[in-house]
Amino acid sequence: LKFISSAKLRASYGTSGNDQIGDFAARPTLNITNVAIGNSVLKGVNNGAPGNSNLTWEKSRQADLGLDLDLFKSRISGTIDYYRNNTSSLLLNENLPFSSGYNSFLTNIGEMRNTGIEVSANAIIIKQKNFTWSVGGNIAHDEEKVVSIAGAANINNFFGAIIDVVGKSLNQIVAVKA
Image (cartoon, rainbow, N blue to C red):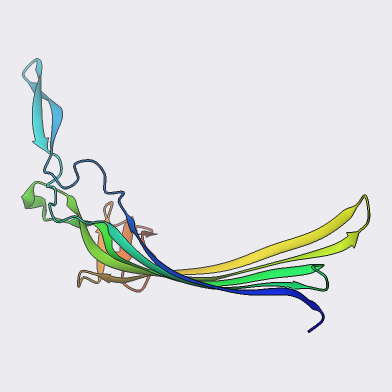
């Protein structure tokens, strides 16, 4: 077609890992704290984190499909991209019973999916020797969904104000009734 200056179809697939586990997260730790005994302040220790020797990197598999299009001698151009990213071995804090002496521990218990579409367009309205006027814009839609949390329906964090629910976005903030 003569009005198409260029068209390019793009596709990609890849896997990657997230190594942002943090120093010593796999090891049990103790915290140094001040303890008041009588009129004296002494140094003491309490449980820090229980550690988890089974921690692994998060693993992401992503597929992308895109189309670049230039029309009317590149006066109008646009791009459409669709992507889908599946993350497994999601690093989340799992709650522990208070009797354990710990609040939670970091573990690979979740799976999450991100899908989205991005569209952008640009048009050159006026193109003169010393003056060019162009206008452009873009729009995007992203949907994030927790697919699984180690068989649980949800995980409550920060006294129930932040919750991870299967089928919803990660780390949703919940209004707590007084």
